[in-house]
Length: 388
Ligand code: PMP
Image (cartoon, rainbow, N blue to C red):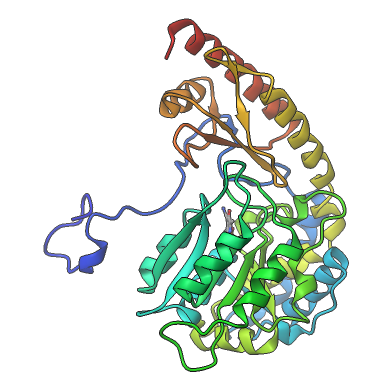
């Protein structure tokens, strides 16, 4: 039984003992634990949000546009600018965060008798979507540098014949990107594979989770460039990270129309509230402002990675994973929970996630990063002195 849930409550048998997912929400001055953009909206953007919401407020007695057409058009404009790929609104679909997008993917393509395959370590919500939709979850381990061995990945896909292949790029929590050419190889291989537990002729759907793609290195292409060629590729993104709009809960996915129409079957009627649609449209009108700190956060990431890799723990330099994202995974500590607690004592919240002994810090403002460096230096001094 899950803690606190009485036996009289008929919780699903397979959910007994499960805990709700989520990073601790602690009241500390420096929160670097959930990969947000630390910069709040400008006064102009706030004005625009209020104006858009005021405009639709008189219609709140009515249900919203179920197809959120204006938002899909605005997302196409954004994607054309960010990826240089032109899509039709019918090829884009939005929901309450990419969390809901992913759940819809599992609802539409997963299910009993089907498998989803990911590359571990990776985002820890994926097994939960699988659990909630009775989909089998399986992983192929990443290499020591957290990259994907494409040959081994394809071999596993050929053996398992999953309905969903989940590629996270850049990956969370490691920050590792994957080349678009490698994604294309996987998608091409999938076109010769028949999904186990599906109708004849069904190929694995390759879902590329690009939640952090705007932080990728200069010149790296997005998987959107593959959508035209592969009807089994869908690319998910979010306004929560680089776009600095996590509180609004807007995620979206792009694919060929058939895949989007499959998601429309499982969505809740009117899943995206009129308030969310209005707020998203307002922010997308201010794309430049919303993205204005991305360049700086990228530079902060590279500087922080260089700093971290010079830090010494137990006579060795820290291991720092190469990141194309707005966070960095580092370690390896004998007792990462101790590091976590000692940082919290100093008002800095990061995340205990990834392989044993590793932690993840997300990029904050310059002041927050200074607080992080000061706190971690003190903690390392203490641990090195005590041998813990
Ligand atoms: N995908 C990845 C890889 C993530 O790290 C996250 C958030 N931590 C999400 C999806 C979900 O983000 P959101 O629901 O805010 O769009």
